Every structure is written in C-alpha cells, then in structure tokens.
Length: 551
Image (cartoon, rainbow, N blue to C red; front, side, top):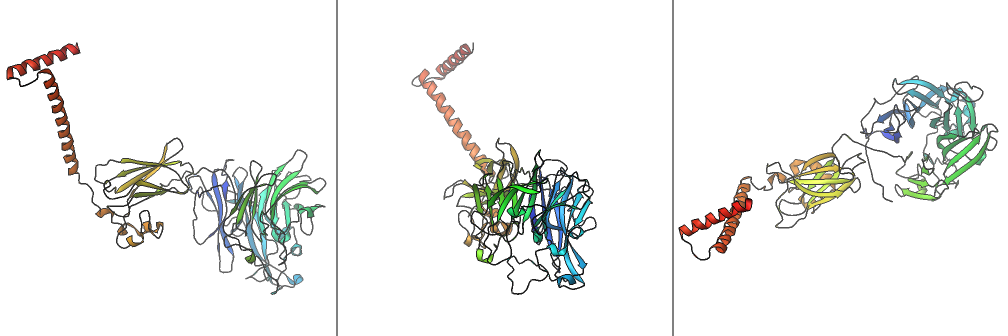
C-alpha cells in the first residue's frame, strides 16, 4: 500500500515538534492542524509553544506560550476540546521541596507535573492542576537517584533532586477531557491513570475540583482487578465513550517497560472498559506489536471511526493499523530498528490517521530541466506542499520569443509528492528550445487549482559534468545553484522576424494551389489554346453559371 508525503513544515529547525494532528478550532470540524514545539534551555528546561493552523497552513492565532500561573507548556500534550473553544496542555514546573525523607537534600528540587485547560480566544487559564495537590512523592516507582550500576534504557533523567537535575517523580504525558467535565491523566512514573474532577464536574457525589475521582493501576488503584491491564510506563490515555449503563471506555498505549534489562514483555495498545459502580475493569482488547518489540518510551493509540486501532510504537520506529478484532492490516517501518540499542535513530512520539483537505495559499513548485540547448529531453518536476486535491498536472511550453503564446504540452497524473514528466523527447534535430514552462494543478474534474511558471534550467560549465539527461548528480540541489549556474538565456531562440518569412511562404503555397485549381477548370471547359475573345466568353459563361447556381 503506497502512502505519500502531503505536507512538510517546521517553523524552526532548532525546535522539537510533537503532537501534529487535525484538530478543531471554534467549531466541531477538525479542519485545522495543531502541534507543539519545544526548545531547551541551558539547564535542560523546556520552553514550549502550541500552534494552530487552518487548512491553508496559515496561523489562526499567535503561538500559545506561558499562560496562567504556570511555566511554558511541555510538548507531551496539546489538543483542543469543547468544540475547539479550549485547549489542554501539560507543564513541567521545577519546585523546591524537602527531600530528606527520600535520602535527598533538604533543599531539594522536583519536576512537578501539571496540566491546564485554556480558553483559546482569550488565552486565559480556565483550570490548572499539579500532582502534589493530591499525591505523595513516594507513590512514584522512580528512585530519587539511580545508582550508577543500574542500566537506564531510555536515557531519561530521573534526577538527583538538584536544581540541575530535579526528581521527575510523576512524568505527566497525556491529558484528555470527558463529557462529565473531568480530566483523564497519564502518570508514567506512577504506572497510573488518574481521573481528576474538573471545576464543573457532573460525576456522582459532586467531587471537589482537583480531587482524584479514581486511580487505575499503580500503588493505590481504586479498582480491584486493575492488574488485568498491567500498566507500566504508559502513554496517551484517551476517553472513548460511556454506555447507558454507565460503563466507561478508554484507550491507552502501554509501553509495558519496567526498567529491567531482562524484561522481555511486549508493548501494546489497549481498549478497556471500567465499571465505576463496582470499581472493576470489565473488559479489555489488546493490540500487541506484530514483531514482539518493547517500546521503552513514547507511543500512541488511536481508535479510528471505523473501529480500527492505529498504533504508533514510540522509540520503536514503526506504526500499525489493526482491525477492531486485532488483525494486522498495515504495518510500517520508518527505519530499521536496532533492538540492542533499545531505541531507533528515528522516533515518533505519536502518530495519527485522519481525513485532511489542504488548500495552500502558495503556488506549486516547478523545475524545468534540459541538459543542453540543442539536445536532451525537456523534463519537468512539480510539487505543491500541502495540496491534497491535485489529481493532474497540465504543462504548457513557450520558446520565449515574446509572442506570449503557450503551446499545449503533456497532461500527467499526479504521482506522489513530486511528479516528474518528460515534456519533450530529446535528440538531435528536434524542434527548438523551450525556454519557459508553465504548469497548472487540476482537481479530479479538471478545475484549475493553481499554476506557476519556471524558466528552463540548462546547466552551465560549472555543473554540467555532474548532470545527465534528466537531472544532476546532486539531486535537485542543482536548482539551488540559481540562475547564475544556468545558461538558458544563451540558448538560441527563433527571432520574431522568422515568423514573417514562414507566413509569406504559407501564403505563396496557397496562391500556387489556387492557380493550379483554376487552370484545371479552364482546361476542362476550353481545351487547347483560346483567343482573348473566346476567353472573355468562357469567363462570362462561368459567371452566369454561378449566378444560376445561387438562384
């Protein structure tokens, strides 16, 4: 199954980008794009921003940064909710606490885990919550200081309790909102999923805002059989639905990692249902990595509209689509995974699958290439970053003589992110040099979506040694050489005066044909030579005959 790149974009090469997904903005339609960016300070702190673009890939707001009483957002979570009127993000706050009960310094530091719900129009915090409001540090499964002889598979900095390396006891990595106006939080280092009461909670018993309604997994689970999930370093908990009988369903990516070098369990995605009356997990559907890999960190689980499960495997550079029953429909490698390293060079924090219609305001990008003025095919390379409705590319060419006319060229079906088209075959003696090429993007009904014009690039002496008939050895880097590396302007173009010569020749040919035809008629009507008087009679008869035919 072939899948092609649609859009590539990153506002900063120094920033780490996460959570790219279609999202809603001031409506229920998911016709915008949301993502998080993060840069790192000298102390390793994250200064993050959250971004929202419309389907032309234009920002609809300024980036969302520091809001409310908390620090800059962290890229672990960013999503819009409430019909795109609010957004959720997480924040990591460095706080000073007494760590002597945990064999740490009295003036110690922790990395506190917080989340916010923010009004997207006013950029004000509606609700904020941090872990120590309801939890204790010893609830964590992470030691304050990892001994030097313990293998740390993920490379995570759990911390020494210092300002430079605060203790990451909680590690919040996802938050979602339920129809009861409560929040579902994933605490990686607690091996726990928490349901936190919101300010307008409609859950039974009117819980106090910020209080813990229930805990699933970890040291103090509210459910009697939570071990059925065996949560360990989990990510991406998402609310799915609530039945009429009150059963709540969720999805989660369970990394299943316990930090042991001999742990050979397999990462998986779960759909699970809980009974909040009897406080039990009543069912679960598991989707395991098809190759039996263990993802040490990151990962996502998305239930699609048709019921399929779409899973990203985090530090294992793969993703998979399962049927609802668990059959593997599509399994993709982003790169070769080296299990001995514990993670791939390429990692994917989360991956999403969703319908998307992109209508960029930019023009298509076109490069026209010919190896020399006299020889070689004319080749076009065209792409349009972000455009999803292009089905065909229609090319036209011009010799640049100044007459303003375009000659129709090829109509080519879109073939991936970039389409290559041979616009004219090469070879000696072929028609003249086409200095300009135009391309139009067409939808499935051949409506024009956009167009652009490019001058044919002909490599000069500096670069021609690395070029062949269709491209140069450096790939499309040759286009970056600029006009100073092209000799297209030196290629001979037929002068406009030649058009007059061609026109006179055509008129002369027409005149010859007319005289020939007239002579043949004359010979049929009066064979042999005719005198001037006879010729006049012949012509007079011809004219009378035409008048009779007209009558």
